[in-house]
Image (cartoon, helix red, strand yellow):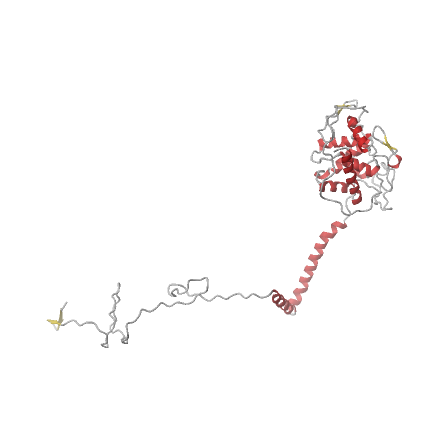
Length: 398
């Protein structure tokens, strides 16, 4: 490479010039640049560098970053520049409330606030009134009339339990020679054309009175509880019928017997007596429901046909049904073709049907209490029924 040729004015000349080592323009000594993999064209006249000691490679610039971001010392080049974060300042709740109150007061003084604020207040007032009405109006509406009225127990009592055990038969001692007692599967009792029931029968049979099938059992339980045998047969037979017709109810005869005791002392109120066919004689009629003496006020609903009073209703029979309720729920349990509220057989079965209404399960305490209070919505009454049913259960060994 020591020989170069040029053509000048058509003449070819050869000149030989010695190669000079590269040196800084100012003649000073400096570091020899290292070769690059992809060298760029050198400028015609590079700027002179001051003669200094051997230069150190420049340290890459770094910038501080917030905690939780990239590690400190990371080069700025190659990543986006981050803006510093604004830290949230926690304001005390009291200060927030004071600020909100001031802002609301200032807003209420503006034209828009003077118009909107009364409307908001009115809206809140209407909402509060509607909420209060939803709670108070149902309580003020007259409740449905109970099935029966007990004029002697109108004093309310506090603390009626809604939990715990519900009174009821849990089983009866075996009675020789009879099946299908209360608490066991119902025996098949059918009436022949002449009215005489067929099936397991114990004791004398009165035509058209299937409850006589329980005579032996009723006699034994009657001796232990003091319940008249005729009434005991009616209560037991009502349980058996309901065990087949409304199995989920599981009503016990002890509950029916307790209601019969509280309402009429098992058909003996007003010097009445239960006849062998179950009919109370003379008829048991309550006091007129005229609103006096703590009694409910119920105007006549049967034109006096059942209670012989064309002005006010009177409770009827051993289970003390109101005429309008009897017309709805009355039963014929003794197959005589008549729904008679003065017949303990018919009355006991009708009372059981009423208690079982609405899918109640009388073994559940809440259902039991709800059923008794629907029969007569007096707390003292419900407690008396509970106590008597529990007593009958203990005396009978159930």
